[in-house]
Length: 229
Image (cartoon, rainbow, N blue to C red; front, side):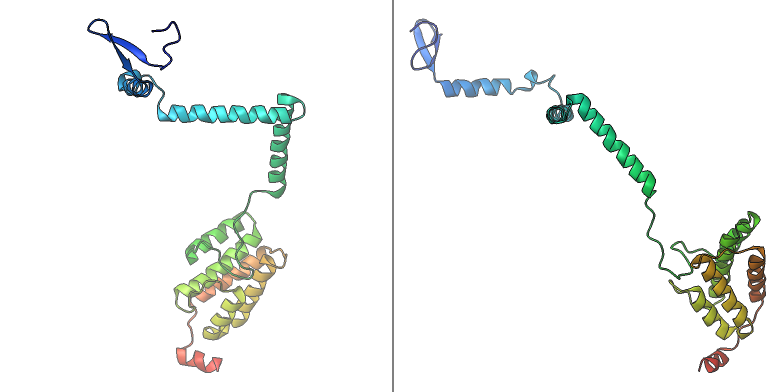
């Protein structure tokens, strides 16, 4: 047996039962050590999977920050300044563009994507009128008129219908109200799409039309078909 550093054959010498040396080759010894160290008793205080993942994440962020600091002019202070500038630009852009809105409904359509009954539209119209928001009041009253006609089966419920289309269709079954219906549709379109402003009188006119239509009797179906032809 040679001095410190082991034998040239790189074997671990173990004496068993006296002076008989037993040599254990390197690979089996390594496997035996790995097997021993894999027992749970040696890993009771090891970090769990989540902790190891967080450690790896922080190490990655630390390396990333260090790399960016080296590349940024001024080192870490310069990197912080660049981050703050980027945040400021993002905030300014968000303020300038405003909060993203839902896609507007197709131009000319009467109702939005949340269908409501005639009574709900009337309530909304009266609330707007009380606050003197005449544009909103006129719009909601026109919607109440059309929704009421749908609820009475004088109009077929149809998504995407315009105010003009509703007035023309309703005017065929209610010919005595055809002219005020067309006028109401023009008022609605002028306010909603033409940039016009309503006033109290415009709202009162639509409210009176709404009340008149509540008691209006439609023509018989045969008469409506004959008028259409």
